[in-house]
Length: 585
Picture 1 (cartoon, helix red, strand yellow):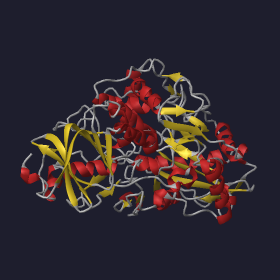
Picture 2 (cartoon, one colour; picture 1 turned 120 degrees about the vertical axis):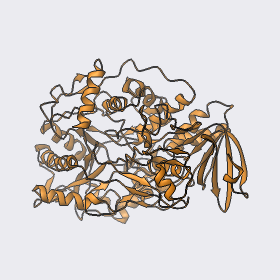
Picture 3 (cartoon, one colour; picture 1 turned 90 degrees about the vertical axis):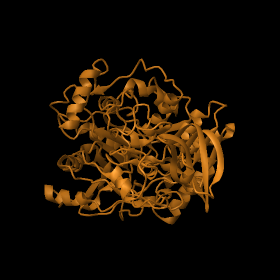
Picture 4 (tube, helix red, strand yellow; picture 1 turned 30 degrees about the vertical axis):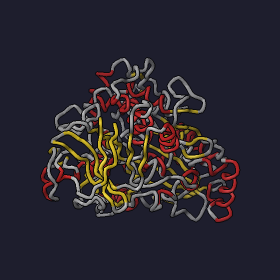
């Protein structure tokens, strides 16, 4: 490292074994696990501040921190060409816990086939029987089960499901011919059933409360909030430290072992590029010296896009009764007093995973059921009792990018997902609406079903549905893939999460996922960090001896089935071939 690479007024901040950039869903886990070694000295750099707040802790208040400047970076997309140039909101967590402190708390491991697909795409070692023990290590699940964890830091619970609409939705799915799953995080992911949430004792279980706060108490983990990482410092191609700004002063922290970048799918590629790792043409355009030419840094951006199908409810049993100041006050007072009641749930207490068409081997559509008709950000509610599903596709073929706006660390990057720019995405999103309407027409919902509020009875043709999709779809806030993991030369990181072309640098967060999982991403991100922490330490847990991979026996010819019992666990090579064919078709 040349002395000219460091500003003359930079303050020395000491040397650490590990410097972790980002105290989010992955960074908090890494600090906790690496800090289990009492001799390890760890520095965690975080752009935001504390997540201590009632609106973060109270599950039912989830839409508030998601739209609060203190906890959210405030990003928006570039105009999206597939959505007629719409600019979409892109909430990303800023502060201890990262997006785990502002998300919807839906806990979904994904389908076991997600991880077989990761392996097939070149993420060697990340198949289901290898990652399952890390899900188990992370969890404390009420009731447990042979595939669940009962002693982990992360608290996982189910809602009370007292509102009859939750069970009516599941029964309607069964009447439509879909399987019922007792728990989508156990043996059977496919089908409709109850959902779990990252909530413990009535409070949000963020990675800050579950992991980082406990790591700090040991005394060998130092957290520095309100920092802006300027760049990672290199000596030739070896990472040696981090240059960061706090207030109006520059600081230099040095490493004895590694820099670990865990800033998330948007900010991790941004920090890499500011540090000289990325597409050389883009770096030179911003007068950034190239340390390692990586064309895929910031590319391959994926997300889950979703929309809402809303139905009027004829009985006054939805959450609409509480959408006034007195109703909200009663919920809040009950929660403050007991940490129970409607304030202790995210209200996504049932949901499901189905396939959009025959020939898809595992679910590519997800449901989150909600006993109210309201927008995801909580800002717009129907003026009557209602219910809805948030529904969207899980493996969209559209790909976007994250690019530098300029070279300055205070500038947010440009982000474009290129939503709905692949023709298959339109087939799947139309299926989301039509298959949901079919479920909503079943006998179990007849006593409650009024008129369709959205898209509305007049929205039936492909053209009408396409316009509805363009006008109303929103991000499910699950970006990933911008620092893709793989064993090929163009992948950004190898299967041990090491950045290719340099040493002493890893990226560990959802940006390295080679494919988005079939479900919410927070649980998989935590698992990823759990396993990566062992890879750093040169050890891994034994593979699971019981790791079923279930599918519909007739998946190739039918779109739905009430039974999901074919186990691919004994034929992983055959399954991976099918998964690659599905991904390419």
